[in-house]
Structure formats: structure tokens, C-alpha cells
Amino acid sequence: MTIHAALFYFFAAILVFAALRVITARNPVHSALWLVLAFFTAAAHWLMLGAEFLAIVLVLVYVGAVMVLFLFVIMMLDVNFENLRRGFRSYLPVGITVGILVLVEMALVLVSSYLKPGVAAAGAPVAADNTRALGRLLYTDYVYPFEIAAVILLVAIVAAITLTHRRRKETKHQNPGEQVRVHARDRLRVVAMPSEKRER
Image 1 (cartoon, rainbow, N blue to C red):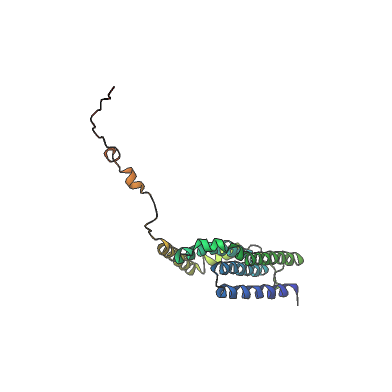
Image 2 (tube, rainbow, N blue to C red):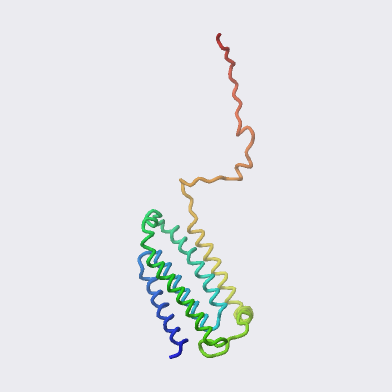
């Protein structure tokens, strides 16, 4: 078994385990951390295949979007922040485990790329510019599915914002339109009072 095959099976085992923990963990914070590990492991697979652009996009888009999704979950479920802060230390073991596994995966991918430079995991030579080739393929053969997917994602974002945007009675806010339309008589009231004489 070659080093690339061993790394593939190692990353695949971590990916399957992290995916199972995402759906079996009872704590939403733990689920989000395991999801981050799953995305990083999938990005390691892309790097081993020589598709560095897809790996970077996976990390930047999905790992960055995980926190946004988690914030939407908090806003929609009204999670108690005091309980989250109180149990902050309980998240440290999972967070440290995920962080160590991510660092180990990055180190293994870098080491495997230096062992055989210019050759992908499958043995095929790495493309000189796969980003340009991917862009041409997306905007020529798959332009309509790409645009439809973009519209669906836009509708999902608008729906998520609409669901989480709620007016609360205890929330204090200002209306700049009403502040601009105010008149002097609304802000100042002149009261006529009789003068008083001081007694000596």
C-alpha cells in the first residue's frame, strides 16, 4: 500500500466518523465542531487529488458558513446564552480534538505532496491551471445549472433572514425617518408662568 492510499483511507475514516458525530451529537456546538472537521477532511481529499481550488473554496465557503448557520440556529431556537457560557469548559475537549486532527491532516497533506512533487494521488500529472479549466467548464457546459443553483441559494438566504427577523417588544430602536421629520414645536414647549416677587 502506497502512502497516498494510506492517507486516503485515514482521511476517509475521519470523514465518516465526523459525519456520524454531526448527526449523533446532542449538543449543537459539538455538531458544528464535528462539521468543521468533516469539511477540512473533505478539503484534504481534494488536495490529494490535485484540485487545490476546490479545497480552498470548500474551506473558505463551507467552514466560514458553518458559523453563520449556527448563529441562525441560535436565533431560531432561542438557545439560552447563560447555559452556553456556563458550560464553556465542556466544549474544550471536543474543540482541542478537532483542532489537533485538522493540524495533523494539513501536515500529512503537505508531507505527501513533497514526497512526489507534480504527481497526484491517482498517479496522474497535476494540471497546470485547473482553476481556469474549471471556470471554462462551469460557464460553458454547466452555465444554466450553475445559475439555477445560485438563485436557489439566494432564495434560501432571503428565507432564512425572514424567518429569523422578529420584532420584540423589549427591543429599543430608533427611527431616523421620524427624527428627520420632527418640527421645532414638537421638541420645545413654551410655558407662560407668572413672575414671583421675592420677599425681603
